[in-house]
Length: 140
Image (cartoon, rainbow, N blue to C red; front, side, top):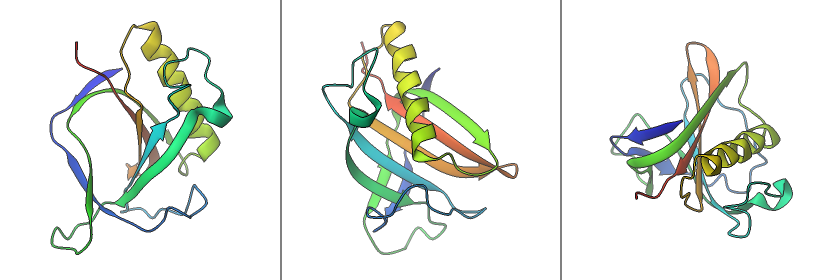
């Protein structure tokens, strides 16, 4: 689904880069992971799952205190392919990676020009874990 994010969502960068994902997330917490996608697989209709992700650029945690110290990172406003899934607990990395690959296939099928970035947002809504996948789309 095409989606335009009207306003950037800000997070405090965390030091969780070495953490095995997924990690425990509590009811009122929210995290954003930002990955570069391997350029060799970012526009493939059949990308290799093991080689799909490139570098983990950052992990950010939503903060209720806007004056908190630390580096702020953002899910920027703009055009995205958007997918989400609700479940009892946050999706495992294998599950959200499959979701991101299916999203890429659908986006390419619809002839979107996809950027090599991938944002994964983990949060809770209505008592369920929600995993959201945002893939930037280039404007025509």
